[in-house]
Length: 96
Image (cartoon, rainbow, N blue to C red):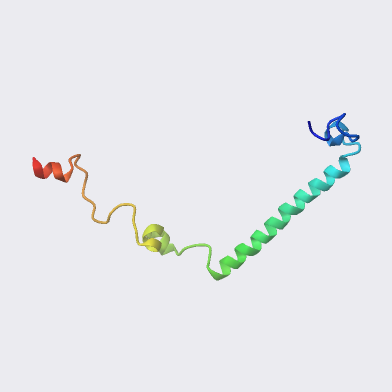
């Protein structure tokens, strides 16, 4: 049973007291939530600006057109010299 429930302690809690006595604490908690969100947004903006000025957040247009797998990793999803699929494996073709 929660501590804010009637009969557990001498305090009713925010829910059961209809915000008469617990409204101050609820206001402090809402304020803390707003401050935490603001602080996180501010610090994230600083980090993003620092990364943008040093490393950059985007790749070049040429790398984007080429494809990031090929331009960054030197790999591609499909082989450069791919053969069309015939439905028969090469071992079946040589044994037939």
